[in-house]
Image (cartoon, rainbow, N blue to C red; front, side, top):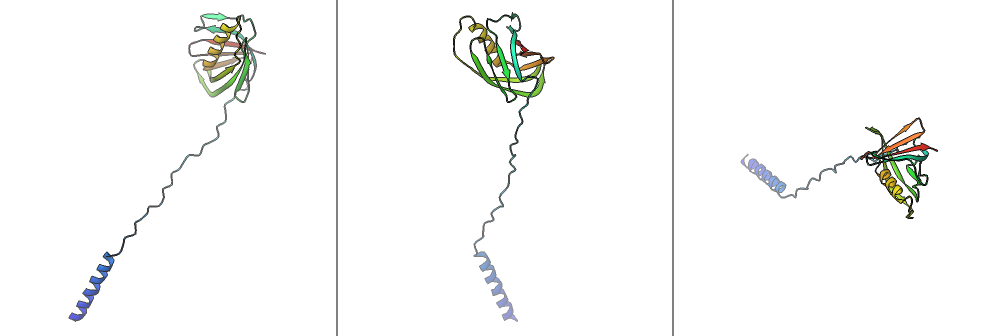
Amino acid sequence: MKAVIIVFMMCAAACLLAAGCTTQVPVTPAPTRIATPQPTATIPVTDSALTGNWALSEMGLQGGQALLTIFPQPITITFTAQGTLAGYGGCNNYGGFYTLTGTSGPFGKTITIGPITSNMMYCVDTIDIETSYFQILSNVTSYGIDNNTTLSMRDPLGSTLVYQRT
């Protein structure tokens, strides 16, 4: 019986010794999947009342303190439903882009215009008016349309552009 216990102990010791000499296989964690949000196509905001042709009838500078109503050349703007604009500034043709957010601010619906590009002609009689016009237009942040015939746009300094539908 003693011999059986000694053989059993030797087998147990051999098993422990064999188990301790084996190389452990590193456990590789399963790859973690991170949910990446898929981009969604954004639909541009449009305003059918804004699209079309407009002619400038008033330009209020310096917070509306200096009002211009007579222009040596007609100043125009055309808005498309695709977010582009084009027109005539009194000396040069111009074009650019606009974006509507669909929200309203304290002075009407919000709009971002620009960048505006134009020809580079110099016209002595209209350059000051055109320069002021482009400056206000590129800084416009809000607009409103009355009776589908009058478009008013305003920049943060209070300068305004008022158009009539043509």
